[in-house]
Length: 246
Ligand SMILES: C[S@@+](CC[C@H](N)C(=O)[O-])C[C@H]1O[C@@H](n2cnc3c(N)ncnc32)[C@H](O)[C@@H]1O
Image (tube, rainbow, N blue to C red; front, side):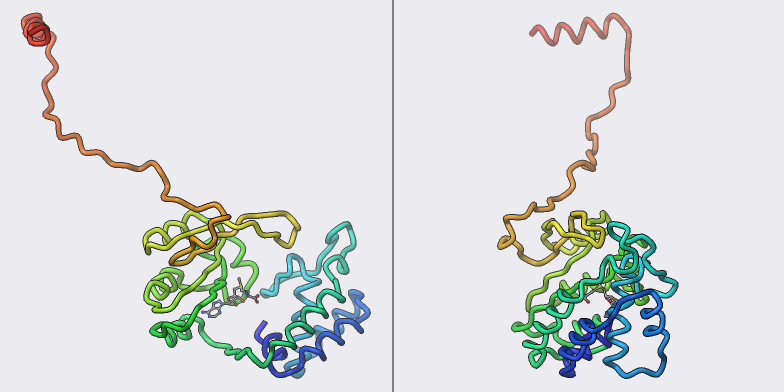
């Protein structure tokens, strides 16, 4: 992934767009292309795009395999939209000179800018909070200290916006750090709509989306009443009823 962004900021987005448009996609051609070693940065970027579009679920992590049936039984070609992909890179070319790309630990970069009031962070971490979900299968670098990320977000002087999957562990962390949450619809690789969690300090500008409130339930009550030993003696019962009447 880093190779793709590096290629865009190096001024080779147009090269990548043309390469995508010119490629005759067959399984054999993909295997030939991705088997090349000692390739340049831009060629590595092209290999990444090919894998992402032809491997099952777009998975780039080690051990991923080719799409077998894909969408509508179109197999390996089912997620290959060269014109759309090329247009995205052509669009990126227009803003490339405003992007600085750093292949580093995101937590360290957030720390570096955390005291700046004029900085806004958009954070899209791998979805592995709670030790489950898609992130583990999708990315080689899935291992992230989510608790540390939330604590860092709490410390930033500017603003931040973070996206996560709608998991209980994530919501619990967000509540504990006093953040707000909204649920937004998102189309996944299987073209079905799922809900994604957006987390931030103040999200009232997103009021058109459902707010995620505190979970109800779990109130613990302490019974402070003195326990009265249960009595069946008729004199006791009489005493109680006379009190009631008076
Ligand atoms: C949900 S994806 C983000 C995809 C990104 N929004 C994009 O459009 O390319 C999460 C990414 O975080 C990366 N990642 C994991 N740990 C990281 C860290 N400590 N610092 C920076 N990136 C990290 C993973 O490699 C993965 O590519």
